[in-house]
Image (cartoon, rainbow, N blue to C red):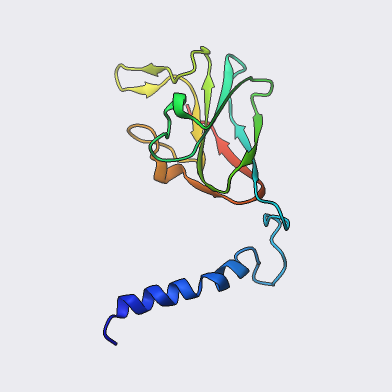
Length: 165
């Protein structure tokens, strides 16, 4: 075999139709509940955010499409500020999303300024609660795109995240 890498690439590409045909199947062959119905080309994602410490301010739900816009509030694909009616659980549904990769974030914007308020002394740390898809807990700085990105397929899905303070 002259070029084993070329063989692997060709074999991988050739197997894509097979992988696509089983992508929404469970081991028993039953249809997965998260699979999109036939003909559905857009996605609907419901974000469930738990753990608000109080009802002050509002919950700022944001959707980001790529690494270059991640946490750039003025470049969010969708941004919604909603009054906190239930500090235990708040939800927002985003409809009409194209299938792809997204990052979701929620900020407990207690002072309603549209941005995360920080304390700077003795250690820089957020004063307001925040959360992101995949629930990473940042150590020094915000979570990276790689830590939060999730695939969104056609149909309905739910992203569950828990705020940290």
